[in-house]
Image 1 (cartoon, helix red, strand yellow):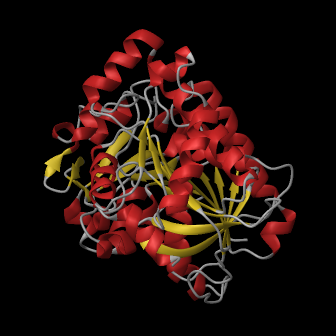
Image 2: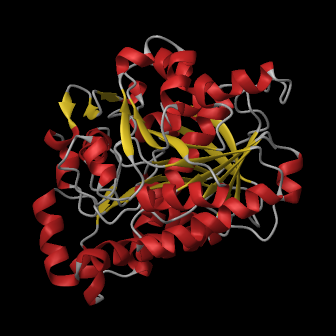
Length: 421
């Protein structure tokens, strides 16, 4: 194993795993910190550990991330990668800054980068400011994210409020001069460098510049330049994307807990296509009016009436989400939905469902835990950053599509299902 990665949520881990696989690395994704990585590390160039730490208290996120780092180092990782969302989801308390600083201290390194750019999905960094397509992040729907609202687009300012480490900018003028110039700029002073990137060419140059840093932090796309350097050094040999993936036959379901604007558009597209749908309400779940048994009964019945998978969703606009948070509390409003969807997933798997499409990082983490798998093989790409994956250690064949809330085109749910037809 060459690269050991720590992702702050499940869909982000899958996104990174896909980027590495697409660029010719053999990748295994592990959910949670395992006791040992010896077995999977023997057959992988990269191991990506998926945590559920994005919105935890900073101390918990640090503890989890350091445990993952130690496991990866024990398995032989030459370089560590801390992966977070391309929308830099965080608050002034963290968790990007605190975790990055803790990993730097653990590794004894004074310098790293922070680059969330993912141009293929419309996320770019220019002059240190984060854009979503042609909008500043602070003007995008992310400004109303229920857990990590992003209202400051200046990443130097955002990260400086999260850590005592110096934070500075490596501007695009330097990035477009190439890897050597980027590397020299990073090495000038200790601290965390926000690095501009507006294209895949920029990201590949950044990857080449940081391939020998002990720690890299960023969105998944900045990792795309690392495999080429590893091959040049003779550390890895090429692998075909999606190598070894096989989807089991069987029924499927779509479970959506994300409230992102894109997920809401994907739900609308599914409804227009005739997908049978059930909307969940957090307050009704909390009161006991909506139960897992009732949802499972709906899915079972709907799956008999259509070749398309039924869709169960709690996604709603910010005003509706705010009402639930006011009554249940910010965290609990999301937890009741996650717990119900996880219970539904486990019950459906026991009834023979084998194909699960999940929207939302928190939802996906809860669903995978309920399905009892802790290791995933990366399969074919559905949309940028989202592959099908197969469970390596479940007690029955399963495949999953685990989508970050804002990822995928409007037809994502339909496209994902049709890929397996």
